[in-house]
Length: 346
Image 1 (cartoon, rainbow, N blue to C red):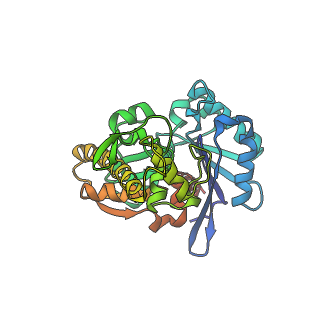
Image 2: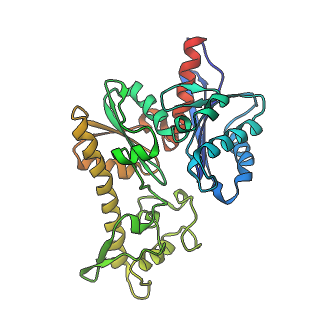
Image 3: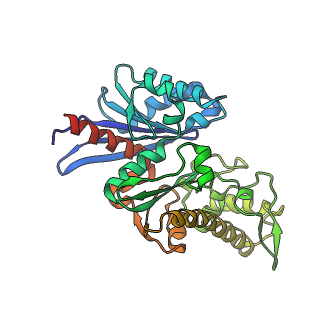
């Protein structure tokens, strides 16, 4: 098979910019990736610079082909997805003038930037489709469970076909194939309405005091280096600070609540999140009873493992195939898909 040039795969999100580099190796293609935290709504004009910085971290010489997928079009920086898609493509073209840009669509095709501008709902939020299409080549019947910092993608795959009911974010929320819960940024009040306190159950203060990443950090399910978003109180992403934030979930503080109480709050939030994902998995399994395995990936793969196990699925880590790049699976996947396309026509 002819060897395509190295490819940069992009997953341009509203809070993280992820890029993977795929190139020929001695035993086949080699992929590595990186992620730069960047909340586009706070400084949209910085996107071009962020793209260049991300590329410099992962590549050597210029002149690569780029495979692009995105979710940043949903950012509050833009009034419509059409506007967001256009802005992101403008930034890519400004960052990499003269390079070939290939934009991934939910129907499994790569389109030109010009075509993508006319199809904003097909190319916006298509990152899940890229990952699912790659997984379908390797695991013909399964459910992909990709849990990132913000959302969970649950994508059924049967006999090598992606059989998702929804193609847009609203339709995917309706089908249960998109669950707005992630390993970091989800406010705790969106995870559970009550948590244990002093032998009873207390209501959760819906005031942005903590995010679920605080619970996972306190419990040791993530490390401080994984906590890449701003903390709700502006204090560091340390275990002690996470405990302070979790105490405020019940309008308390660490003078009032000892470690055992914070343990209970954090564990309850973690359990509730797993149950939320498991319920959506059950909906998918009712539609596709042939599925017996879950391919898990993302920063929140530990949540995916627990949810999949809870509904009786065999667990297959995508990291077994992608290594560390599984943390940025859509970027790696879209690069692989373009590699396959280029190899097939070379």
